[in-house]
Image (tube, rainbow, N blue to C red; front, side):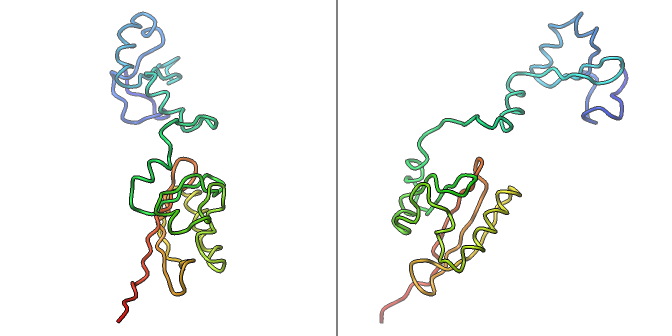
Length: 182
C-alpha cells in the first residue's frame, strides 16, 4: 500500500493506519483492534473516505460541539469555598454562576448569582472590564487587568480572567497597599 495522497487528513499517517475498504471488510477484526489504539483511515477508490476510531476518541472529538451537553459535577460554589482566593465564575452572558466564600465576603451582593460580572468594579471602569471579558470569551486566552476597587478609594484589584467551560473564571486579588496606623 502506498503513502496517503497529499489531500489526506494527516501527513504523519503510517502504513498500519491505512486500509482499503475491501481489506477492511475481509479482515475487520484486525482493523477493529488497530482502531481501538489509533484512528484507521479507510481508503475508497484510492482516496481517504472514512476514519475508523474508538468510541472514546469519537466522544472526545464531538463533546465540545454538542451545545446542550453539560458535564455534571460537584456544586461549583462548594468547591470554590474550599480555596482562599477570591474567585467568580460567570457564564457566556457574563452573569455570575458561582463564587468563592472570600469573594462573597469581599464583594457582598455584587457577586450574587445572576448579577452581571461588570459590577465587580466601579462604574467608570466597567467598560474596560467588559472589553477584557469579551476578549477572553472570543479568543479563549487568559488576560490580566488591574482595575480600581469598589471598596475603597485608591484601592486596586488585579483580575486574572480565564476561559472556563462556556464562560469565564475570574481570580481577584486586592493589591491595595495596606495602610499602617502609626
